[in-house]
Length: 357
Image (cartoon, one colour):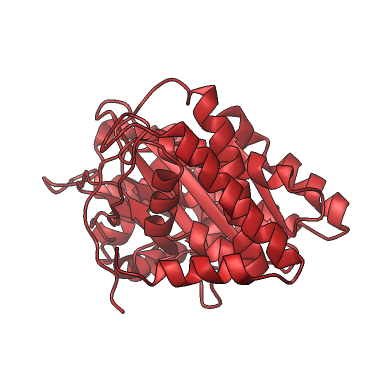
């Protein structure tokens, strides 16, 4: 069945969710998590959280503003605290969050690795690479301020990130899922949500694969040759280009050319992992790929759209606290009974989902 798509904007909303709402969001999230784990398992939970439409709908069902940037950060926080409420035997770890919590992601991943007795170095690396790709390999004007990394004991993982553009007062959500055929540097996202579109340097687009190869070929030249090629370009930019001469410090660029050469990156993923290779370096390399190797990158904005509705802000109606509490109670009762092999209430919920109401 084809998924219908519509448009939503994620305007920046400042402040915090009211405590009365967040406390319910935590309990609601815990109930939903427990039901999905019971019925379908951990992998399905991560797959759903990585789906932009399902995630948006979950936020709306929990009573948050359907169009607010806060839906992402607050729902991730509620999911993280909700799963902690379920006890230590949960097979899913939710790490990171907004601002300072995002920086703590590696430490939290290590904590789960010690708790579960497993090597989590792969997850730490994935967390860093996904963040660097969305912050540097996709140059869309949105700076990351939220990073949530979710993983299971079986090795499945999901990333939910959000960037902000303060001048446009807008946010953009990036979502990933560890599908079997995922290539981190070629159309890796399950969705990017934002309704503001512009010229974007997207180095992980399918159309950028030639530019990726050209950038690696360029990196194999000696630093002196790299810098000579760069100088010969003389920054003669097309009118619609994504960078200007003012964006570059030639002295710093010369040093990073040396660093790249010494690291001998074998592919684009290895290139972006090099310390010091950030947005400006990748922009410079993409310019060389375009003007010297005639392999232009993609300038198509990768944002995809999703839509759902809800209402902390009173649209389309104020949150009914008594009804919300009753919903949480019903969900919890369904799970408790199902654990005792009484699936009548859970089966009733399944039937209800198929009714046209």
